[in-house]
Length: 373
Ligand code: SF4
Image (tube, rainbow, N blue to C red):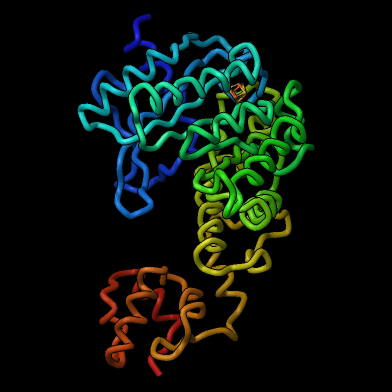
């Protein structure tokens, strides 16, 4: 295969990894660039969007993760790119102003440190040969040594290592080769330590991802781990990727779950993202996230609405008096609407909910939880 063909295969195979800032709304969906390569929009720290070239270095892998289509015994077309090839293509795209950064991951080639060395080499070429100062997101390969991770820190703007499951017992159902504590938790803690505020690598963003529904974990366990990743390890973002039936081996728990658990896998992922937002941006605590008896979120109800329903004593919230945290508890009001309310009422009393500029079903929902006086 030539470079273009390999890039088509490898950028397609990188689609399951969401641990960069690409999301699901209309503006930040991936699209194909010239020659079929996937380009991934990311949100910028200063606002707005730009586009990443996202690819694997190799889709060959010595590991055996049974949920992954690239596991060593799966029959896929394998190929690898050389560090110089990736750097060359990246610079071509950059010159055309089609992208602003790189997201680079890989299957495990030979061993974790060899693979990290190859990934780091791409970043090194871009930083030192091409003087590229922009965004580089590198994947940390499970089982990489402390030294290889620190080398990546020196070169990257962001690093991610997928935690995959909330705890060892769920992880052990998915891989015989990888060791949860040694290969995943230890490097996640190292990433956290190295990027602490005021430290040498505090500029590097750290993210991680759960594979949702491949093992037998509950939402309650995922949410607790997610909380710990933010509160104790100071991670910048946690992502969720829904396991899609048919990609893993037949014995994987995710393949055998009852239809009711798996017929709406993306809704489960969506609910977890809603919880993630409630905790990061709405001031919700772990106790505010309400789960059913089996330890899962409702697939049918928004978690904020579930909380509101269980706390009738909290409502109505007063549009002209309540503070920001109280307004954020209202289903249908997000940080942007609350900011607008605070600004409007600092200038004049708000006399009609309609004046907030919100329409339709969302407006009707809000009206059920607020009062003007
Ligand atoms: S290490 Fe990564 S690429 Fe390899 S089988 Fe596991 S999930 Fe797939």
